Length: 299
Image (cartoon, rainbow, N blue to C red):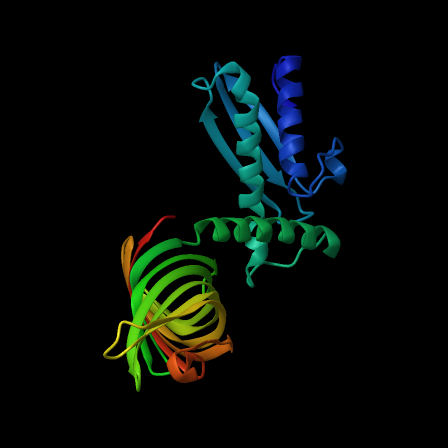
């Protein structure tokens, strides 16, 4: 409803912007005040000042919310959008109490109308919660003990929270190791990419503790050399897939954090190479891992 002398172009512009804003929430603009769950009154009091009143009649919360602001600083082609946004925000503020357990029951509105209003507010809360979840970029050191190899190297990880207690991350690792065998030495190189899911049930103001599980896949290369000779054996590059799980803990300091994780698992697909005298060496069996990382919050 428009109260006061409003040019037709302004009315049409505001109605259009408000209709689009409400439609995105699954709510329709209604011209019949008696059938509406909320009545939005836009009143131009004096000069360039407009009083925007959102009145939610007994149909939902029997509450009146009002906001007065000066939109003279807005460009003429942006005022309609500014007023529509203000009306939309006031409507959500008026319905916000519906998501609390202490919200009084509606005496006139049907349960269907109340449920729609509650869903609109909950969707807004969920959207804001998702946009506020952090994204971390971390760099650190990784150690992996498997099949008598002690691999060490660097780890790069990008982690995005999908819930207050749940995060999904992707990682890249480059690991190197060397160990002796009866006829010489074997050098191993791993290049891995992984996906991990973390659940942190213990969350505090300065950190969190939880569990993680994940899959890593990549390439393993095993090269050998024979003691006392110049002979060498190249094992070639082979695919490797591992399944792991473990525990982790983090300490957070504003936009920085320090994290440590340990895990246990094993290759789903092991990489085995044949060295001198047909001796098999490889990356297979139970694997123990650990990493220490420093991260910065990107969002």
